[in-house]
Length: 239
Image 1 (tube, rainbow, N blue to C red):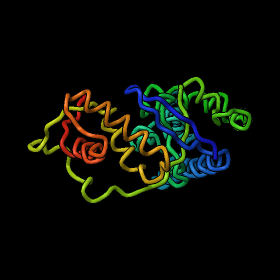
Image 2: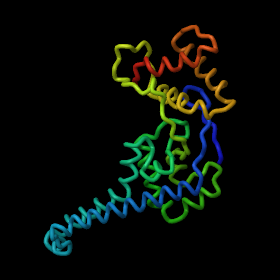
Image 3: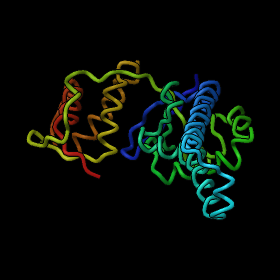
Image 4: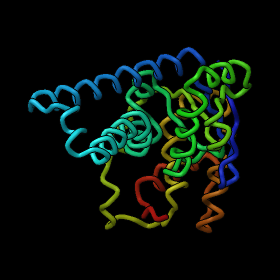
């Protein structure tokens, strides 16, 4: 499986595994099936009330047609945006295949990125162009990924150690102030450090140097791991 190295805004390099063509197609098929299911549920709901769509159109005309268009648009287009925003770059299909969409700089996607990439999914990529482009792209990108500045990565689901699963809203024990990007970077590193292999020491050193310089504290290299865990546990996270 191909990998990509991304330098974060904190100037720290992280390696990700790119999602393969097969897993992305599998996730897309599952999402499509869920969309069909949603459409069937809506249709069943309408018919259960003994509503005659043609009768409504004859009576209310454009209002009914406009309502149907909005519903179809939400099912086809809004589905991806709603789930990507609520599931941190995932959809139900991507979650099953352990995939996640992120920005090309390693940060989580915003609603702007989701709107752009999924608009091109509908108008271009859904006609097979996306699959062809992913096959020839080194980063497995479709048109929507190029325009939206996103990539899709594969991730292993690893449970956080018990000591990390705490309520960060309790600020009575916080000593540091970090950004959301820094928090995500720390959390990602501590979750993935066992799979980083020989890159673990180098990345831990860069993170340790970055945060010790930021907070003007003195730590030796063999104290970096403890210090990074302390930061995750005892920091106020702000934008």
